[in-house]
Length: 192
Ligand code: 5GP
Image 1 (cartoon, rainbow, N blue to C red):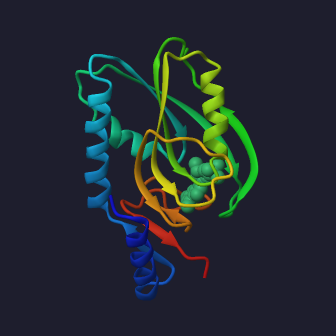
Image 2 (cartoon, rainbow, N blue to C red; image 1 turned 135 degrees about the vertical axis):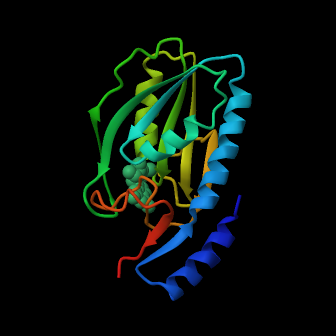
Image 3 (cartoon, rainbow, N blue to C red; image 1 turned 90 degrees about the vertical axis):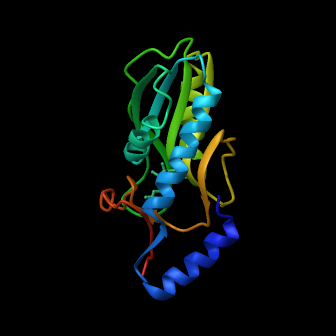
């Protein structure tokens, strides 16, 4: 995995070359890393079944790629939640709304919670508590991106795709005001 320092350097260069919307993580890097994560998860859940719970909307592309990298011998169920902590800007409102809950029971299941990006940890800690109250057999957390920020709500992550500096990113499912989700790569959105 690229170090935080490596991303800082890349971020600085990218902004100099193309201020506005510059590539932080390429399509190839995402695909390679997601494949690695799929292998790890497949090893960890060998001989068990898995209930994947995705936090919409940002994680939908990541989930689609991740589950196709999980060994088909592992039975995989999918469910989704929709939560929102951000308005249409780039800073958290500090409030979390559960807009859509999972449909199925999680009782006695091996739940793998999939989050797109962890910033303050507010979203994840609230969703984690909610899912734990449903009595799963186990609960692990996977995040595509972890921001190297001062985590106000510390939640240990079991699988992390990329650790990045505190910049606002879009693409590969991640939006700004519902735009840019369809980018194949992850780009830094510069406020300017
Ligand atoms: P947290 O609750 O950890 O502060 O924020 C997590 C949620 O905020 C993510 O699920 C995502 O919806 C949104 N978020 C945080 N950072 C970013 C970012 O850099 N880009 C985008 N598009 N969304 C972000």
